[in-house]
Length: 201
Image 1 (cartoon, rainbow, N blue to C red):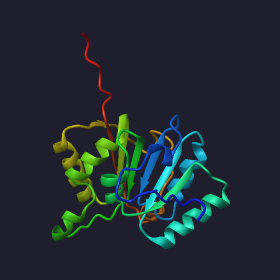
Image 2 (spheres, rainbow, N blue to C red; image 1 turned 180 degrees about the vertical axis):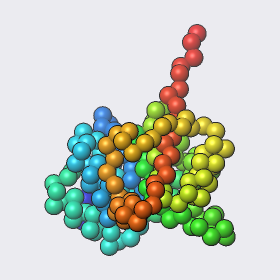
Image 3 (cartoon, rainbow, N blue to C red; image 1 turned 90 degrees about the horizontal axis):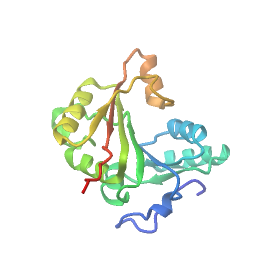
């Protein structure tokens, strides 16, 4: 299927050259849904490469059709679980920005263990990011936002950056449009992997 990314192996790290050119920034959209955000970013930044991750086949097919229809060759979609992709497939130090927008908040206490933002997940995000790379998380669920903020704080490796709605170009997801129409607010968390300074001497 045009626009779909199928890795050579599902049980080892992807080679960066499979996803993008060496000299182009790579951004990952976890749970890309109907592809509204992915397409918006790919159109705005033709000099960057984008990989959407989506587990539902119907959504993957729809997004691939939209990419083809719009002639966007700098974005593809991988049909797979987000957690597995980050923890097992993404190569180390290859991602400029990783986006996790409006994920399932699993609001019931007994389901919190299913939430994507956990310490192990953040370890994998850290490994996949380039120095100076960013992890951007957005949700309308205030309790999940507090949870994620606490997990990031306890992880104690990321720098927290300011992120307001007008900080930079950022197209809205279908969920965000729906929830804002219902009067809900979006909570944003922007984390950066520090650029490590070389020791002198």
